[in-house]
Length: 65
Image (cartoon, rainbow, N blue to C red; front, top):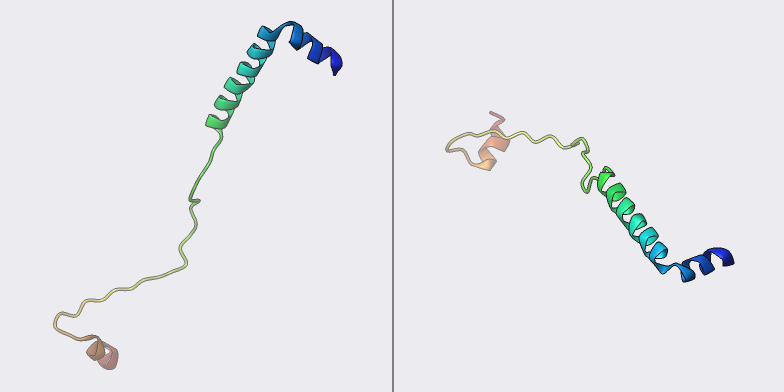
């Protein structure tokens, strides 16, 4: 471990190149990952709508057209 630290102290340009290389590879790696903020899920709700012109909600409920 001490040898690696001494190497990068002696050659700081190599340390900067390594850092930028890791950042660039990380950027492209993160960009290629598949992510979804809202995953697709099947809906468990069924909605039925009927239209009876001129009828009130009470009439539809009582008469069962």
